[in-house]
Image (cartoon, rainbow, N blue to C red; front, side, top):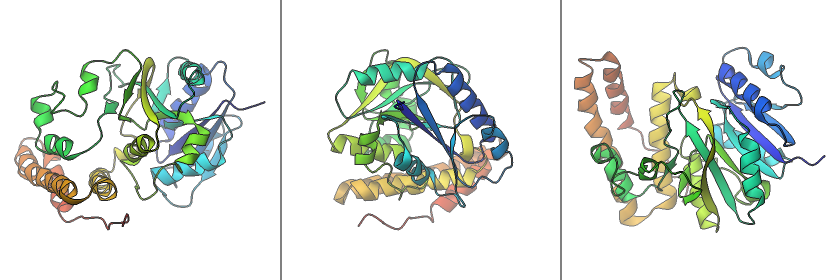
Length: 309
């Protein structure tokens, strides 16, 4: 039997979330022939084997070290046998037959498409899962909090499309990497994720390259899944913020040059400087904010090597 869809899930210390994700995936897939590839990035908590043993015919890859989100997904892309690949976060779960709906749509298209569906938060509110590509304007508005001051204005907020509560299929710049589906041959043409991004910005870079290669990024709001969010990064604050900062700069290094690169970098570090006193004084009221101030102090000293020269 031909495999319609290969679902790739990367796990790192999210075993209980993975259990819920797999359970809902198999429960709500009613018609497609699927293979499920689970890559564990050397999780330190116990229980992974017990959870995956509950499900039949999983393809399991257990890495001896944490290879990062992009490289682990690429392991799955390399061995995928389905016509389509779904990259799925372990902190998601299904409540309807989303796979059939997106598959039916993609089967009507003869284009290079990477598609994302509607994402909901745990409280069923709409999650911001569509955004514009990063650039000088976006970095300025984000780092100087102008997107907070003018949240509904396109010029100030890279998530402006979500304020319209998009209800129709639309071409966009970026869809969140929690749910990305496209033809296997296209993922392989793109060579998957750029492994120089260890954690964060992998999907932004991928979407950027999709457009560069004549493809489309499509937001498909006619079905939805829940995305708890955070997942493996929740308990590792410095890990989270340092990798966000490093990956942001790496994106600038890879795709921008000259004044655009310099301007984005200035915006980035100015944003860090602004946040240090804000979180420091906020820490007088809420202790956790003081910890974030210390993290931002450390971020001022971090600048990743340029691997894109």
